Length: 112
Image (tube, rainbow, N blue to C red; front, side):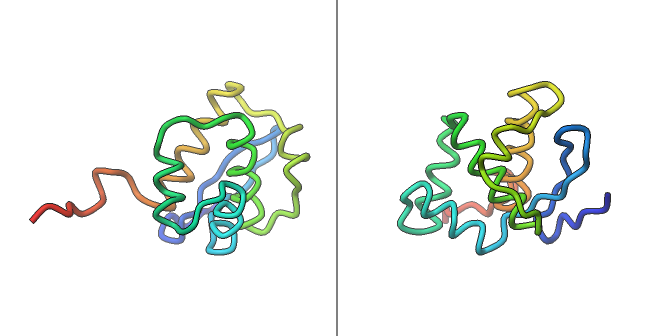
């Protein structure tokens, strides 16, 4: 499966099938609503806190799948399986967030 990292796309395998994930603007708006974040800065702060619940992971993956065009519900995401179990899901979420927002190393410094 081909993905375009410049568009924030990643590839993942669930239930032995390849999927593309992407946090589009609509998917990010869905996450803002889900996490009651007032703006993208608040969403980034919430996601970068390093404390994600299993429900948070389901929401993020669901939004990423829907953002890439897959018609899946969060309930369907809850039933999916991933290689390496929860560690695999966490790795995919981390990769998706890095593809969307970049890593701390890639962000320009705000110090003068």
